[in-house]
Length: 127
Image 1 (cartoon, one colour):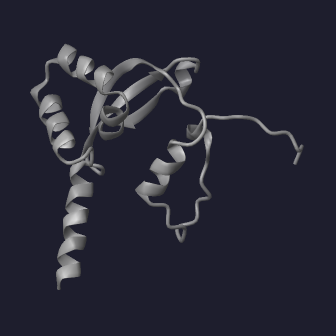
Image 2: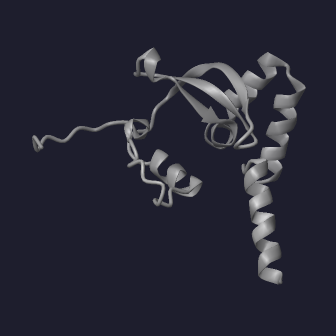
């Protein structure tokens, strides 16, 4: 409308809310990797996401306000910033976090729902 352009973080993008759009997790991952690379200040807490079968970390981003902190999947964080994740896991001392991190490493950083989905598609191709 104004003709002005601004650089913004991918988390600021909003999708059109049409149920017919095929917005896959791969597409969301691709979009999230575009644009500005941000540095992590740290993880404040974690939670389990039943839909993704993955832990999520509440991430504080350097250069952004606290209101822009976001929940990010452990699989992505372990792949992108393994040292920060390992330190957080060590500091927390929770066996579930460590076990899940080992599972993600063994499965090429794919959470359980992605591994199951891939196995189902392989079975379909065989039949």
